[in-house]
Image (cartoon, rainbow, N blue to C red):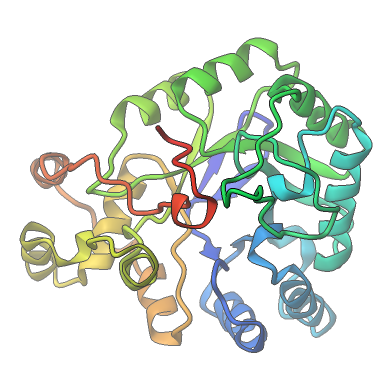
Amino acid sequence: MAITLNSGFKMPIIGLGVWRMESKEIRGLILNAIKIGYRHFDCAADYQNEAEVGEALAEAFKTGLVKREDLFITTKASFFQFLWNSDHGHVLQACKDSLKKLQLEYLDLYLIHFPIATRHTGVGTTDSALGDDGVLDIDTTISLETTWHAMEDLIARGLVRSIGISNYDIFLTRDCLAYSKVKPAVNQIETHPYFQRDSLVKFCQKHGICVTAHTPLGGSVANTEWFGSVSCLDDPLLKGLADKYKKTPAQIVLRWAIQRNTVVIPKSSKLERLKENFQVFDFELSKEDMELIAGIDRKYRTNQPAKFWGIDLYA
């Protein structure tokens, strides 16, 4: 099952996110995921494991497990790489750096990870650009428009097939639509039953932008450990629906997201969970149950980078 992007390319509706995957685990996880049926992998320079993902992909291609054209590979440029620098060379360098690490000739989708510029720490590095006060050192002289036009140039160069944005709200998405020559194909945002963001999702879809749900399970154990957040998977309603459909709460949440016509990229380092997360195409939630899930929205963001950056970028 796939969604056709405004660029004309098809994006599998479920993918595997590689955030917080340990380097030593990646080879086995990627290869097993491909065997299970995953054809979409979501990466980022900031995850610091593109090279390991690239080694696993190279092995998959070499052994004939899968062909390059059968996979959809997304990565994101970290703003710590100064993607927003007015010198377009930094955008090009950042993209080429990711391509080299991933051992690919082109990317299916390249995203601006966060809509903010910070002090340059060097292409290929993802160190937090913190000031002496421990607060993210934000550069106020670089525009997102300049960055976007550099992203568009990557398509002209044949390095990427589609470009998009990540963590953009309605205001920033509207602006991007206004100044873009190539419209963003995707906006990757946190959204799950406790943080549904219905207005943003509908705005993007109305204007032909596919929404990808990162943190589609509400962060689960990972965000609970890092940010002390509460997981929606423990919600009594979702547990009740899991019993009704003879599925797990995670499968209910992923199916809900798919029926919203959003792409999901759950992350797991466990083989059984990889299989479980992919087994969401053999049932459908009723309209009534979709409405019940709509009623548990808490407007609750679980991913809180302010813990590391000393500033709430969502304020």
